[in-house]
Length: 250
Length: 269
Ligand SMILES: Nc1ncnc2c1ncn2[C@@H]1O[C@H](COP(=O)(O)OP(=O)(O)OP(=O)(O)O)[C@@H](O)[C@H]1O
Ligand SMILES: [Mg+2]
Image (cartoon, rainbow over all chains, first blue to last red; front, side):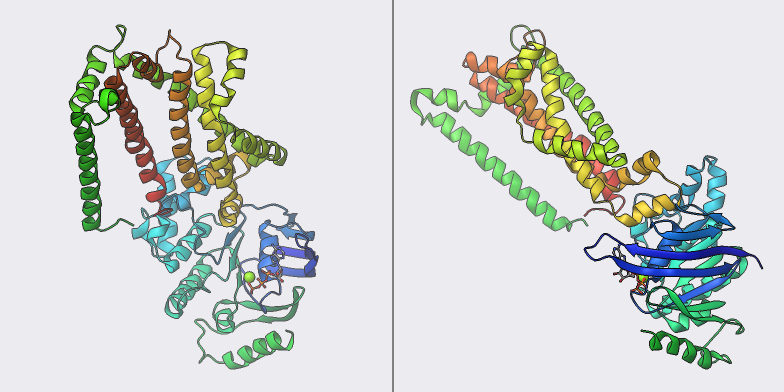
């Protein structure tokens, strides 16, 4: 398998405060193509910051390479799905939100645009809501649309920052199952941040635990057969190992 | 969210009753002539005002019907509004793209927003002479600063997540401005339009009253002519025209804009 994302000596210092704060220090990470990487870590360890650097929203020192080429600014090869439900443009309908990036790219053919949005909405089972405005959707539906919008662009990497954290347990389960299926069928690489060990085990093919400064203190392959449930063989051991990694390095 | 129907009807009834009461009071004062010899001047009867209202349009003054005055005023107003709104969008837009422009423009807006247009009138007349262009200038002045203030504030209030989502899908500078900043601050822009319109309308009438340009007689000049001729019923009738035009713009233009943007998008209540 080839490496899609290479992070070399990434250091991020926030300088907008009175005290300079080094959030990430010499982070090195390589991620394979079509990987589903889950990132665990205590609150404030720099998970969001790491994702924002990859997305190109932050300035940093070090290198971030996608397919061997350096990336410093945002681009459609790395699409971010935020935790915030309000990431869709409220002034555009669901389908227009999905079509918009393609309009920017110069695609004006209505039939083609419609094809793009309806195919993406089908993947998240929201075909019926194409004409709705975001405010008319529930939180879970908004996150589904955000995922559909990302999928439509067929990016190299989809960056997800606790996208399900604010959902109720049932909706969360549903979305995890959907995402699992989608990730199987798509050729994108997923980097998924979560606080939830169970979620990491259910979704991740590779799971890392970060500690302060962005150092990976645990890097596990998850070869359990899907779908994973707490009853799966090896679940308990992996859960314990991840939990220890999380709490031994506060 | 809409108020319940019952509540809205109640509010409407209260307003109608209030207006009828006020009009009856006016009529009572007018008919009883309780202010002595000048009573007829201060309080013409409603019939006189209504008759004057019609006469303003049919006969007008000095051979010009009210329509001509309204037309002249509205043309100047439209010209000033168009220039003012366009300029505020261009300059505020440039402020988003360049920090230097922002710093300078922010200062200019804060300073000039404090200056009433009529206070500028003497200087402007010295520079331009007495021409309709002066009125357009004053309307532009009335519009551009409040409009720009609102646009700048609106741009500043755009949630970072929309900007980042825009950057992520490939928007930059000008396209980000049009694709994210502008639609995201529509509620600010609409309230800017409301303030700008109100200021422009008042500024226009004041300017016309202070120096009506006889070659392009407007509503303000008409009021002044009625005043100097002691035709107070005609004067009141003209005030009603001014209010009606104001209401038409509010309910015919500004409200629909609001309904078709921020309300439709769930961005305001
Ligand atoms: N814009 C910013 N300016 C200054 N400091 C920041 C900024 N954003 C984050 N930080 C700091 O960087 C550190 C890491 O923040 P980050 O949001 O990456 O943590 P996180 O791992 O995502 O936490 P959580 O799990 O709570 O989301 C925190 O200590 C925070 O105070
Ligand atoms: Mg975070």
